[in-house]
Image 1 (cartoon, rainbow, N blue to C red):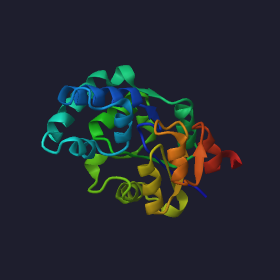
Image 2 (cartoon, rainbow, N blue to C red):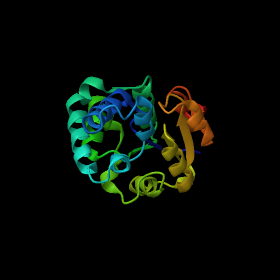
Image 3 (cartoon, rainbow, N blue to C red):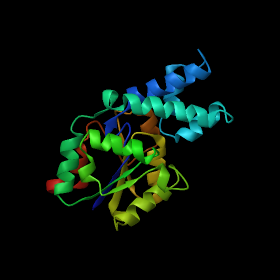
Image 4 (cartoon, helix red, strand yellow):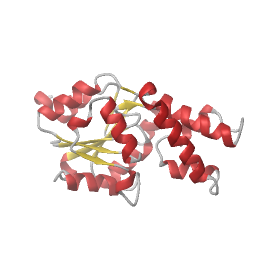
Length: 214
């Protein structure tokens, strides 16, 4: 019986793909013109920004992070939108009394921008960001921290996400896992992680969680 549902944010609840790719492209093209393709950039999505840029150049990582964030914040509201049926689904879960939380590798200020823009902030009393943890997903720490804050148990919780890190973190924490098929990484990437469920539309969460006896 599911009582608690944790969601990743980017690529799961809100579509930030265009924004993320544009911010990476802007930054990488500045430092390394012509070196990184769209496919290269997509490979960075899902891990902490610090890890991505340290793999590019450890010495310049912080400068690149600063440039990325400046671009990201400037174009945020123009390029970010929620996925279909996200608002209605999350609203229903909240009304039905499910405990809801966000577990993301993003920094808190940008997370709150996305939640405010899509009016989802009202449904999530607990938001665990990169600022709140020592070990990012796929380590289970962020999920355990969210569960503790929600006074919830792993046995009755599930993690919903679009990346391998989300599914691995959920398994490491002992919660049910749900992969979203609209991930920019490609459905096969999620399938390879063998989550408990794969959904093609966010509304499918309702039946998985048992809303209205589903």
